[in-house]
Image (cartoon, rainbow, N blue to C red):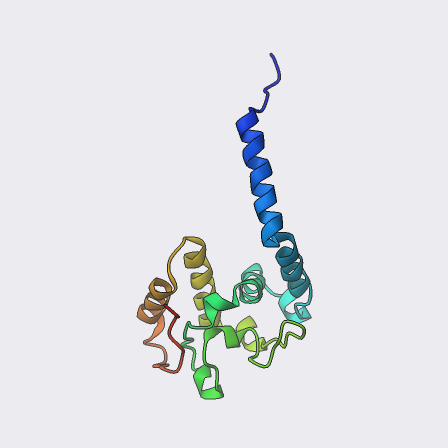
Length: 150
């Protein structure tokens, strides 16, 4: 049996993809995300895989969570979105200040994982928000979360 050879177009496509990713700074973005994830607090590192996944998603996709309401009642503490259940609003890229609430609240965890699943499925921010509102709004009538930008 002869070894399978890669066709020239396939190799060319791989080279083009590599060039595009390097031009976009993807390795740098991936390094920054890995650094942020390495900074997760011990209570997250020792938690379930679902909790770790939610915190990692909050760190790597904050834009997906910042316009999604949380319906666990944390709005009474001043939380304006599900993102604030994982990362405090005082956080900066250089200094991440974690919120412990997301590590033990089942509603926060479910919402963050739903947003992650739907984001990965290619749903729009508007579709994701509508789904979250329809699924969780009966728990707490939170109205203070910003709408997704069009």
